[in-house]
Image 1 (cartoon, rainbow, N blue to C red):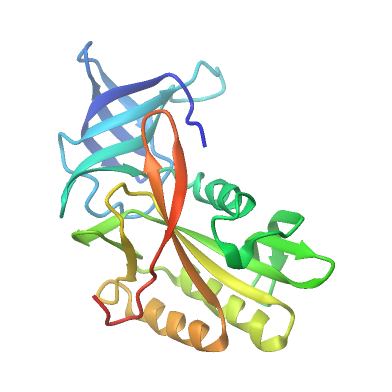
Image 2: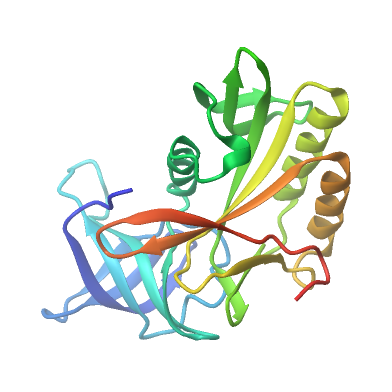
Amino acid sequence: MKLPQPMVPGRLVRRYKRFLADVILEGSGELITASTPNTGSMMGLLDEGNRVWLSVSDDPKRKYRHRWELVEVNGPAGLALVGLNTGLPNRLAEEAIRSRLIPELADYPVIRREVKFGSENSRADLLLEAPDRPPVYIEVKNVTLSRRPGLAEFPDAVTARGAKHLRELARIVESGAGRAAMIYMCQRTDAGRCALAADIDPGYVEEWRRAREAGVEMYALACCISPQEVVATRTIPVLEPGQD
């Protein structure tokens, strides 16, 4: 997926109020405020001085011209580029499915977005449909945390919403209404496998176990990231809780 152009580099000063970040632009040294399309904790991404990339818009309706898209971090295995825009993973997952990157989800002629389902007022990020096969309800999660070399982790904060989605997906399978799948979109250039952060949210891990036992399918995708584009390139293992 192509990123908005132009992209301008800068250095992070601070992120605050969940939606905002102060950045010093490279070259001019100007201090600007950018919108932040990620309301999560962004654990491990917020060190002052981290190099960042911002998209720029001339849309007069936007309060902030700059939007924070990427950050370079000194991760467990060295420098890594991380995509933090939570608006991208669903589209990246759809691209990956259409390109048959996940064979188990390939060749569905219809892909619908944001489809209501379940008893807890949930929406499937993607719904795959075909006349000769059960539908597949898919939830996509953006993964940016890494605390060990090569290991991407989810979640980076307690997520009651994420646990709810797992429950709803499990009910789909148990009721016979179709298949259900989680896709963990690892927007880090250093991700080689994906795991659950049990120390951060043990409740989510318990729901994950129940969903897995019910038959919810678990997939993770690694991405190639640059200031020009973010592309899901390959599947990586999703580790069972307790695995390294």
